[in-house]
View (tube, rainbow, N blue to C red):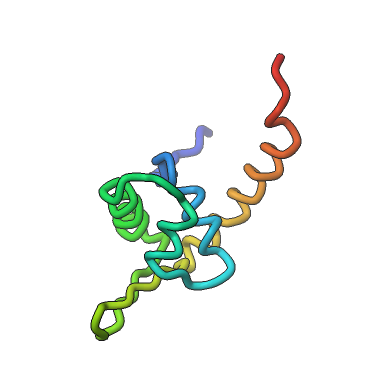
Length: 100
């Protein structure tokens, strides 16, 4: 019998895996994530974060302060995805420089 794949939401986007990797150990502020990613356009940065939130991989917490403080953390679903990212990192370290 052929198995049925209902839906697998794999994050796509140039920066999403880096964002998930960066926040895997602790909550991070918006500015920390932006600094970690370097010189990417702000609209791309915001879009990637919103899509990760929509996909249920990260939480966004807004603190009622002036100026507002926003922190991002992994959801349970995001935590379950981290071993995949770790395997990708391991694969990249092992084979990243090789050219066949």
